[in-house]
Amino acid sequence: MSKEFRKFLLIWAGELISSIGGGLTSFGLGVYVFKQTGRAADMALVTLLGFLPTLILSIPAGELADRFDRRLLMMIGDGCSGLGVVFILVCMKNGGASLMQICAGVFISAVFSSLLEPAYRATVTDLLSKEDFSKANGLVSMASSARYLISPVLAGLLLSTFDISLLLIIDICTFFVTITATAIVRRSVKAKKRKADAAFFESIKEGWQTVHSKTGLFRLIMVSSLIEMFMGVLQILVEPMVLSFSDARTLGITETICACGMLVSGLILGMIGLKSGYAKTLRISLTLAGVFMAGIALFENIPVICVFGFLFFCMLPLANNCLDYLARTNIPDDQQGRAWGFIGFLSQLGYVVAYGISGIAADGLGTLTGKGAGRGAALMIAVSGIMMVITAFALLGNESISSLEKVGDTEDTAAGKAVCSKT
Image (cartoon, rainbow, N blue to C red; front, side, top):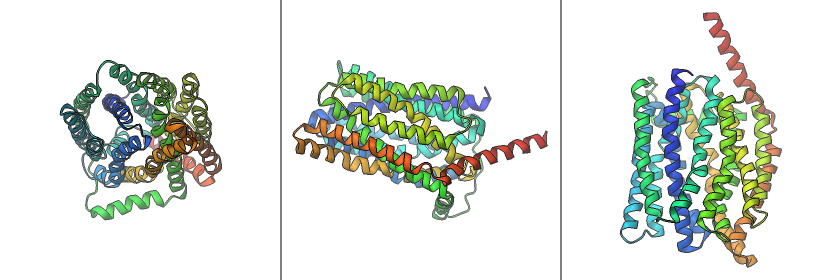
């Protein structure tokens, strides 16, 4: 194991712990709001306000990641995002937090978290060689899955004995661990000197041109936005669907079992990685993910939900790995930060649509059918799964997307020849 990969593992461990803490807060707030109002739309509102700042600020955050010390930006983003969680905790200690206070706290946290993602992704490029990208992406996916794998069951168990305040306190403590890990790596990795002579908005324009100039890359991002819209529907509505016929503890266990699929495939990718066939693997994994998503909504039956949910989550690290590789190998190193800012903005527009309409639609369907918000949520999830299958099968076979892999392979071959010639 190289010295650079060990540094990556330290930062990754900090983000893993942070992901667990964030998952505790997310799960706890979701249960808290649904118990208070009984409306899927209110849960969606909290998620939307927590997500919107990250989306809006992703482009300038990407530009900052190309201009300044990326590890320092990660520390600022992680540390200050805890302020929003502290605000919610204080409100709850003073007699209970209202929906608007929760929305405000989540919004504050998301504003600072927006600094993190482009800097984190660009840091992976700083530390590792292309040969390690696939393994690193598998581990990053596994860390992201911790909020679905570890956090739900832990939160469900804690909520059966304690109130949500304990979950918020644990989350606040994880920020200190993450900042420390990043600070250690920052001391041993010098910030690369980057061009800062271009005007801020002119530089952002260059990032847009980098993403838009390649037809295949831009089309891949647009497809990703559609896919993430469908997944956003599942993310928002699975909790009210399960809570409509079960309790928080069962919900936590169910989410953890389902997320084990991400752990399994993430571990495999972390150990062996993918060597080729990224475009084909992306198409197959997303098609199967859509089938399994529709299966989650079939019955009010926890074992059935667990089986289909496990299979669905198995597909996500594969898809994310392929998406990441196809994009990363087609972006110049000195434009990684601003390009990932645009990629994050464009691809995650789908989440905004999902968060904005899924809760309202589920409540409306529940009222229309007379079966409540839970079954309305199930119907929305089933439709989204079917649409994911259609989108993946119809669009991802495009030649311009497949050509992205050929470009990455060509660059790897050229780099290998350059190394051989030097030796």
